[in-house]
Image 1 (cartoon, one colour):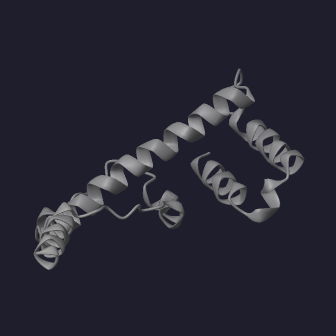
Image 2 (cartoon, rainbow, N blue to C red; image 1 turned 60 degrees about the vertical axis):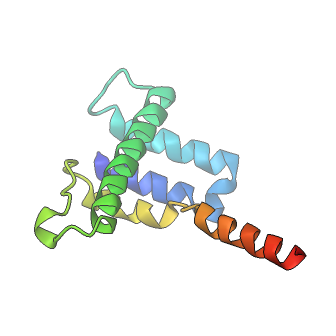
Image 3 (cartoon, one colour; image 1 turned 180 degrees about the vertical axis):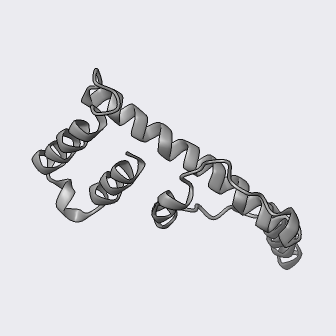
Length: 118
């Protein structure tokens, strides 16, 4: 099941799946697979399940990245609790990292501008 969800998420990111009808058909095909596990499932509950899986993956990925950035040794590196974390590794390329703004740089620039004005 997890592989099927991962496949759908991956396919939905392709340009072909910008087409509403093709995307709907993909959700319906995945729903057929998911209904083997959860017979009363519908597309809404499936989308919620997929969203939850992506959220859990992001949460674990964030913990892994923070562990690496903290400078801990390899022995203390965070190990994800999700048993399917590696299966969802393709989602890492879809994560958008927004660069932060360093206030230290801004303070340095402001004092430099003030000195030039004098």
